[in-house]
Image (cartoon, rainbow, N blue to C red; front, top):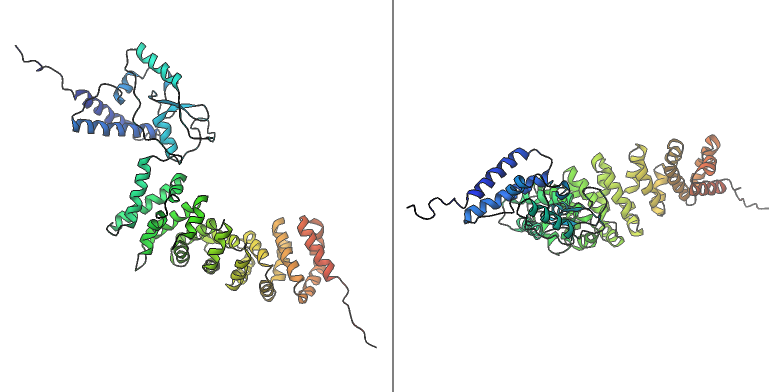
Length: 460
């Protein structure tokens, strides 16, 4: 008589069969566009390997059962994302139903739209769809199948991040700040943070939750004695740019020691990509008026003007935007003029470089008396009159005439040049009739002033 259990099946046979099927599915779907489904297969395979290692068995709820028994289920029971039967159907704000695990991965990736309708979600609360769940249960019972149980999920917080996401974030910062980290670990961590903060706005927000996060990010720069690796430097500065886009981080970043000095140093000594991104960071941070003052007082305008003068096409627009933002406050106009902005800007305008942006800055600086004097000395009148005739932009014409108006009311020696232009081409009269309302007002104000009879004092 055979011993009891000699012919009992190996309790791990089902797991092994599932693992073989999963491996086949992974290989077949490795080039598929269904990334979430592919990841689920990999996750399930890892779980089975762990079960085998620890001697656990399963009876239902696995991928292989889903794949074999549920292929014929009504399409309404399949998740629109994973294309598989829903284990835990939930409703999002647009009214569409998805499997919880799939839609949470969608949200964690930074998406805030409905995958099907592309509508922006009014909130990210996931509501269980008990009706669909009951229908799936009934269908499974009618077909002799075990009801699929929900996969373990990590619930997302208000920023759309799981605890695993936050743990990963903290781990990356630790590698940047620990002196024991290898240069390879530091570079990989910086590159990953750059990517995460670019693709997922939620990771930008996390920086604002701790006063130590930004200092940890900058540790490889602040503790470097012989300079920072160029690629590492670029990744760190770009991450700083990315996190500065988040409104709640702007004040925190500027108030964090070393942030502004690090950005100003990057403007001078980084690669051109790093310098452009440092300028872009200063532009985004200067959205707050209080930050404009801090950046200006720290000497932020001089390196920006120097970079503008160099004329790298990759950096010009970000540099001009940063200078414009900073010069909105009166104190920074004085600093910009002192640091040579007028001459650099006129040179670029004469070369037809970034005319729209630089004319706007020059118009802003024209409220400064020293700036007006420099413009007169550098031949701005003829340059601006020529631009009025040559540009097709109504805004550019308006900025030109606004600057000329300021010159006219501050320097009578330029009236003759304006009269000659008017006599030859009628430029001011034309703009007084055809420009924007502000341009017409300024042009007619100049005409009125330069055409006034000169008062002479007669003596007997």
